Image (cartoon, rainbow, N blue to C red; front, side, top):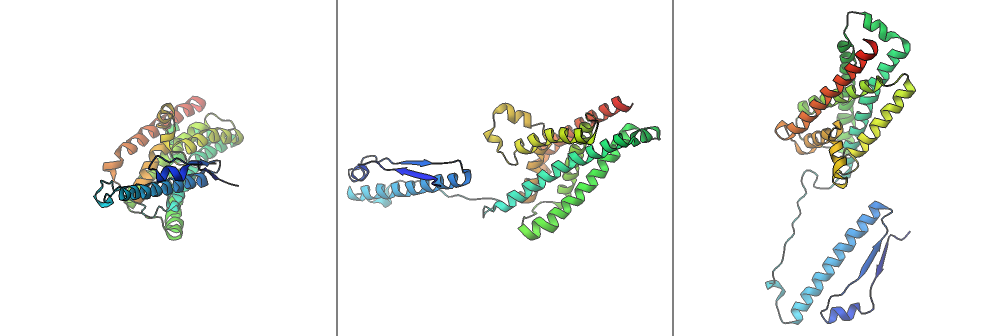
Length: 284
């Protein structure tokens, strides 16, 4: 399939020779987004170089020295990923997506199984408060996620794909634990709105899809309308993206990431409080 089609007018060459503005049109099919973007980038560079060549040629024809003409130098420096290795971005994005899904789904599924089997009532007649019951579910899931994240990074991402780990390992896993706590609270809150495993799966799916697709992992926030960007500010993943990429690729510390950490902590407390309130309302 042709992606690029060019239209060159009839008097294009004569316009160049007579030092008039010469125009050409490039039509690009962007139904294949990646190929269309590359084609437009190449066409822009070719047109720029060709225009610079003819500008220099016209200056020489007029008896001037092109070296004495004013010019603008464009020097591009790529930080943190100098080779533009998309494997680094894609593997980190996949890790964030999988952690998000697991942290929400697993606690919700564990809680709903307790409800289906009737063992939740046994827990409530024990000398445990609803807060302790929910906190135990959250802490166990945080431990599982930390272990899974460590395996993903040190057994797959670094040795296989060469993803760097520039920042503090301790800080990264502490904030990963905070993120797992936030999402586990969201999963437990979702479990209080469902009666069985099928329902909790649908509820989690309705929450996970907009969180993953609209938080900035796969869709740039800059392309969204202002109201949607504001809505996504309550998404935990929106803030953990800055934390994960900041620590892994840039070596950022709390002095840079404090606002994202604070936002995750506030959201986590609010979600856990919501889940606890719903849990007490159902079984209190």
